Image (tube, rainbow over all chains, first blue to last red; front, side, top):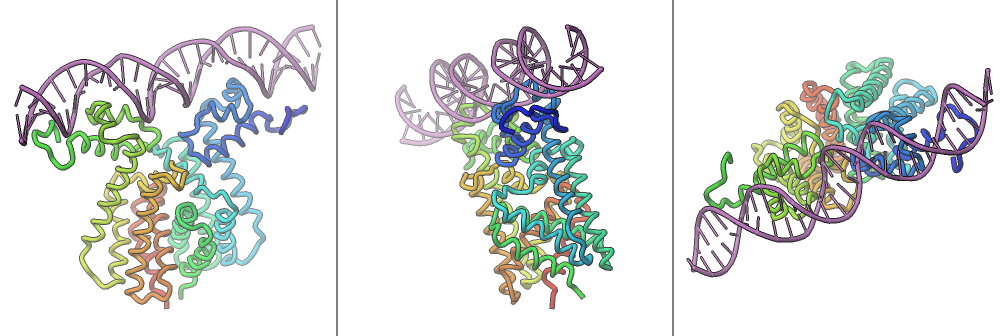
Length: 191
Length: 191
DNA sequence: CTCCTTATAGACAGATCTGTCTACCCCTTG
DNA sequence: CAAGGGGTAGACAGATCTGTCTATAAGGAG
């Protein structure tokens, strides 16, 4: 990555650098406060190359979110198999890992949603798809678990996830892991 | 408000127009995507007047959030007195009212937090104070209610509030009122 | 009348924004 | 060799950004 690749990797080196740089800058500073000139300069890419790979800035934003989405889905798919109830805990446990890993600057999807008000924009489509997947994943697990109202419980877990991700950014990230466990317990262990 | 005030109200007319316009535009479109020239044009104010009342754009953003904060606190303070448990429900019920009133574009504080990464910025200070007040208000009610872990429960209610406010924006606002009731029930009615 | 307060119009400065385009270069493959 | 793919530097266009400043005007109070 320090010098030009001598081969032709699947993802061209310049595109990779653009995406990595944008990912970092967008997440750190917000999408609309980071201009493309800054991304280009820090990625060490020519402007024509930028537009070769991304027809517009919004295309880059979409790519940024899609990659995070893809990595997140892959990580959930790679979780070791456990009984449904424990799977729910494991999925929710990823929140704790994310927010305590350092550099937590809020949920990339929620942050982007704040900056893109138009529900029909491509950016919002990515966010919607992500949320639908998350909700459905939880609902499936709850159904397997025999939860009497899996869809409602899933919606509550999604809301709790959002809230705890925000709390980790705006309040105290260190307290979030125990809050996650307590939240799951209260929402699921009712009888 | 349609024409210049002939008197000198407490809040100068131009300042009022700026704040109202900014409140609408910031909330609808996002803070960094709305420039001051647009606010000035739509408020029908001179640029010098803008800077007379707000030394910088960020001062206007702070004023925008402070006003929403103040109105929200006043609304909670005006809620009819009820037993603590019902007070919690009433406070949480304000979420339902807000998101079903129409035009819900996400929580102004969460949206602003996404656009202001620096925790020490004046904007973030307003947001922090708001969240602290909300958390403490809930905690006080829970203590009166005799909740065994009032601080934890309050944190969960805050997280749930955040999450449901986001869900109303990004998912389905109409389903949020029943989710609010279900969430409060599960978090509080445990024994 | 003067002074103070509030306001108007808008030019100006420097920077930055997103996107278009020209000219050129290197490497690999056929 | 030529063609294709990926890349470089950066000028250019038009618009917009935040903030500074000049000139002027109106209303009210003393």
